[in-house]
Image 1: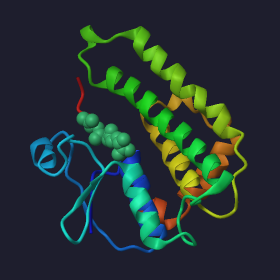
Image 2 (image 1 turned 180 degrees about the horizontal axis):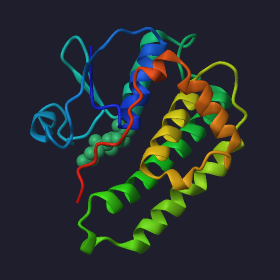
Image 3 (image 1 turned 180 degrees about the vertical axis):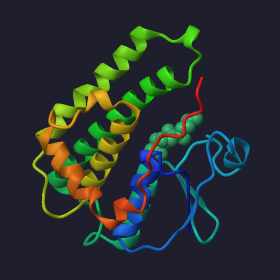
Image 4 (image 1 turned 135 degrees about the vertical axis):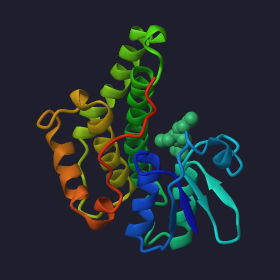
Length: 204
Ligand SMILES: N[C@@H](CCC(=O)N[C@@H](CS)C(=O)NCC(=O)O)C(=O)O
């Protein structure tokens, strides 16, 4: 199978890390959603990443749907999301907060970094940052279990993404439990293999 998308995307990164943690081999196609837009649109009509192209040629889109497929492939014992009960509800909530922060702080970053300066909307940027930032103290209060699961992976990917695109929102020491989680995860080889130094946004 082939995972399409660059690892500066925290959504692509969480899929890559999940596959690696589960020992599922894959090829990586690092084409750019900006530079290779038309080629990627031919695989995903939405022109977004990540995409997981299965061995039979089917292209799965959307990181949540891809992760759901992976979990069903490995079965309930090894699945990274609890498959049922209160544990699933809690994990879904945690993942929703982390993804929500990525989306809102990511939207503000696109606005700040890509949109031509004369068209930027400061109130919208502030609103998106406020929304995304709201998730951080809640995530900092999560009791992280020893066993690595999707809530850990997605939240750690969120931390490294925010530190790249909006470091002021998550200074080291402000959210100690998130620091500990991110340090623990980023020390793992599966995280190290997908780490990127910067974010490849075309500048406006
Ligand atoms: N809900 C989707 C969101 C996918 C998404 O927005 N991906 C971003 C990269 S992190 C993207 O492709 N952005 C480019 C664009 O939308 O033009 C998922 O979880 O996969």
